[in-house]
Amino acid sequence: MKKAVVLLSGGLDSTTALAIAKSRGFELYALSFDYGQRHRHELSCAGRTGLAVGVKQWIVAKIDILRMLGGSALTSSTPVPKGRTEKDMGADIPVTYVPARNTIFLSYATAWAEVLGAADIFIGVNILDYSGYPDCRPEFIASFQATANLATRAGVTGATKLTIHAPLINWTKAEIIKAGLALGVDYSTTSSCYDPHADGRPCGKCDSCILRRKGFKEAGSSDPLVYTL
Amino acid sequence: MKKAVVLLSGGLDSTTALAIAKSRGFELYALSFDYGQRHRHELSCAGRTGLAVGVKQWIVAKIDILRMLGGSALTSSTPVPKGRTEKDMGADIPVTYVPARNTIFLSYATAWAEVLGAADIFIGVNILDYSGYPDCRPEFIASFQATANLATRAGVTGATKLTIHAPLINWTKAEIIKAGLALGVDYSTTSSCYDPHADGRPCGKCDSCILRRKGFKEAGSSDPLVYTL
Image (tube, chains in turn yellow, orange):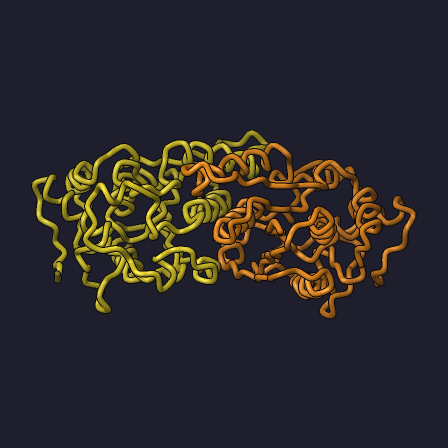
């Protein structure tokens, strides 16, 4: 059985990417990060999803530098924007962008893949709903794949090259949800909110909540999460 | 004053790279890693060097995953090879290779550079004495630079692009030492050994000690470290 490392934040997108990796027959190695994000509730969602889906192993890696550096509303006291229109969201790189986050996450996944002898990494980024994050673009993913293949044994020995799969990259949120539901994803154990209440309930008003709610509506489905607006 | 992030392990190479960055007029932000390496003595060297050189800030980031994953003699109980010839060293990727280490280190440096507004990162890798590590090659550095520029704000906003400087990349160990001595580097507060004694004294027999000793000899200089063979 081929092994795949799957970046699993516990959000809607990465949970769907995990289901897709499973549907393609991979043995699943889920990798989550405790990087000081204010929405750490997503980590318990990642654990519940991992158990439900039957991952072979789940690692939560601690990353202290992103909290130390700040530079993002997700890792500092900068307020998370609320009630924005999609036009607002797309106008600029939002303050919820975390510097070099996906580069760090993919570099950890590359290390684990190399130790496992896995040639496949899954990441749930997507460009259409990406809120302007530079590290959610296809050109970034392609470039990281090239770099990872130079960085590791595969680049020297001619072993099987790493592939970074970003199956959601061109999908709308509605398409992601439809694909996930078709694969039996339980979205009640996912968390998308950037600024959840202390008990994990979503705020309903941050960019991520707004895009998620619209996605479920467009998918003709109902979001199993309860929003307290 | 332009800012540079310098990866500083506390070894001979990165200490020389720091001196080179200083000589080029940069304000220095030194970044070290506690990744569970058995040769953690180098971290205290990094701190002493940072103080002596006058870095503006020094961060030691903790990385737990490399120790968790193992896969290297530097992060597990696999013995560090001793007494090898250079031919042995070059024959294969050695067991001291740490999976994806430089990709992880550079991704952290990229995050810090972005938060600082720095456009320059220094790393002390070199290919000639590189003992077969895939992530010490020029093509890896060039590819990482391209990836980092796609991953960050600079890739979207057209802000100044990041440059990854690897000034030692084509030098022999002797050339590195000569350049460092010309810049006043104090090599007594550096540590190169992969398997030092508990008090930090070098073993003198691992690949890294052998290359260092040969380098000082070829540079016509004497290594200030005391070897207990």
